[in-house]
Length: 119
Ligand SMILES: [Zn+2]
Image (cartoon, rainbow, N blue to C red; front, side, top):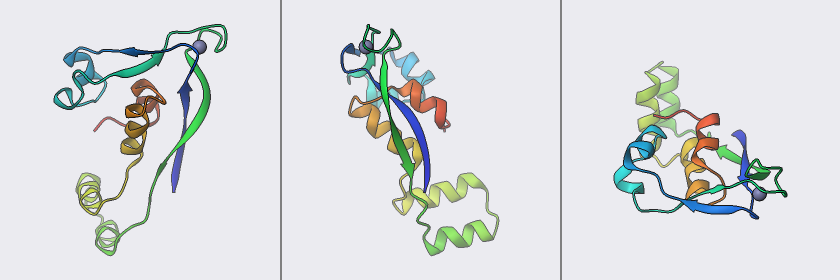
C-alpha cells in the first residue's frame, strides 16, 4: 500500500471558497462536477501560525492487484492502460482517495496536487 502525508486544514480558520471553472480545471478538478460545490481552505490564524493547516493525515493507495492487472504489468503494458483497467476493477488510487478528503473538507486540492499527479 502506497501512502502519502498531506496537511489538514486548520479547524480554527477553515472557510469555504469557490473557484471559477478555469481555476478548477487548473487544479485538476472536473468543473462540471465541482462548480458550485464548496471547497475549503484555512485563512491562517494564530493556532496554525498563519499557514491555514494544522496536523497531517495519510492518504493511501490500495495495491491489491487483480490477476488481470498483474498480467498487464508483467506484459509491460503502458501505465495509462494499466491504470484504466485497475480503475475499472475498483482500485482506489491515491488521487481519488485524496479527493475524497477534499470533498470532506479535510484538506485542500493544492495539498493533493503536491503529492499526486493530475491525470
Ligand atoms: Zn488557523
